[in-house]
Length: 333
Picture 1 (cartoon, rainbow, N blue to C red):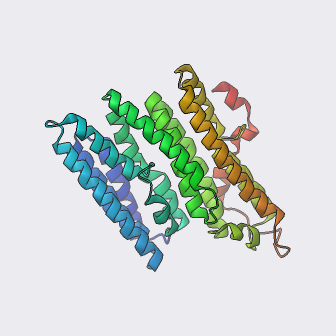
Picture 2: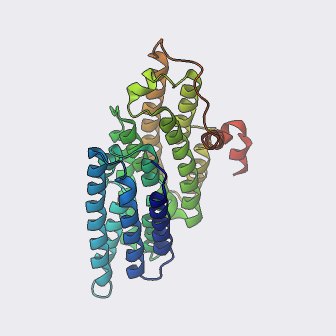
Picture 3: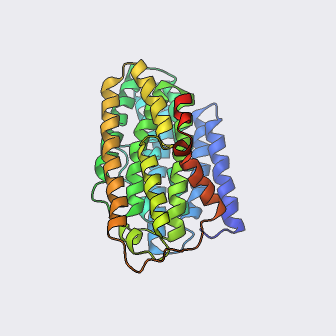
């Protein structure tokens, strides 16, 4: 994304909307924060002035506006019908966050964005809906907890199965984000600090992979094979980053999952844990297949001395591999 004063202003305004939503004491103020965040993010994703970004901006606006209207409608029904109001509020927030089965818009919107815009959609744009969902979970009704369990199972299965036979990297990361949403919501059910920790690690790993894709301008799996500036070293880094995103030990991505697995065992959530682990194995399978194919079918014209990575990208990659360099971190946590 081209950095200029207008985009910086919209980015700051988007973060202001997030802070307003998560610090609000009423649903009306939270709705205002969500709308400010939406109206600030739309110019950011439509700044490329092409057909695909405009289509993604329109789809994102329509979905988010519909979810916001459902949210403000449900907020007015709290005193009249608290049960149906909680259903509508949770559904609207799940739709905003892109959790299954409300995920239908997420991969198509991701496909029309640049890598920087996709990184924002996968990370920062989920902060406000997830925080508000954690507030609804504090009401601690039996139906709310069961509804969360249904969404968790759906996100795990749809995220794992949807990534198969995907050749577009942005859609692949979109389904990966849906799968990680199941782990995030499970951590949210257990404790607030746990889901914040998981979201922090997920954001670091996502930004590290997206920085590699942005560096090489890769948007398709074939780009990983035939890109001239994607050397064997970068492919090895990408392979390790995918393994970390999938949560394979001892990479950094395994640390929050290991903490979550231990807590789920202590809470006797064995069946849900089995669903999450099976879905993680599916995601690891197609991550490894993509990385191995990029190695096995490499072009003979690839330059092995490409331009170096930037300092922020190198730092993110180092954090992504910190679990590999310091495996004792897993034992400490």
